[in-house]
Image (cartoon, rainbow, N blue to C red; front, side):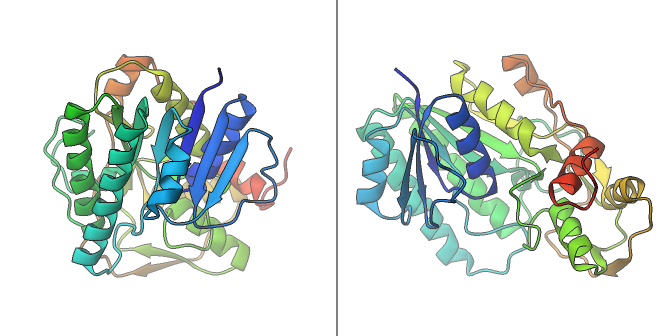
Length: 306
């Protein structure tokens, strides 16, 4: 019998996962607020349009699923939101989904958290064993949800994993959105406008190409590891200025850059230690930052496919 996979939240990552799993012949059940994209025409796909807070819809989804990927998030780091409202909404919806996972004997629940839960750490690269110190409402929200999943995993037969993801990028990501520095740069290139960089551009981040995210998820969902939390990134740090430099090397010209004010939620250095994921199931990213940026530029017809 083919694996039955539920994806709750089909944004950039969810859609890439869905297509990869469908190509492998898995049954994929999706719940998302949006309509099914026209290019997803696979016979193994079931698409439910609606809200994760709709208990009947979530029940319909989970009653026919073995593995659940939970990718719902209403905020990104730096958002100015009603903290109590967002926290209550996201946590209460998560708890309802977890309870339904137990009711329908879901085998594995995989939650996408964020490297923002770590905050500003003094030891880099950052391992899963460090004490999280989030400095954004988004990070606090994700960490709170992690704690509830930890409680659930100790009393439930559902195997749980938490992915602390760091700056994914690649085809399918919104290039005119408010998240993802690399995708935002491409959006500015398409609009022929200056690239905004907060502060001096020396902040360091860990970036991972979407194909590597998909590969890691496929390893994770079939793993029998009893570890709860895993970092997911490339394990290397690049400053915003470094990223601009890679773009300029690929394009062959200097990009117009506009430096803006930093935010209190901006973390100076965030690079993840991947040794745990490597030791547990041999994951190593395949796509370098330069190669990933080139692929992304070709996808958006900024560079020729040669």
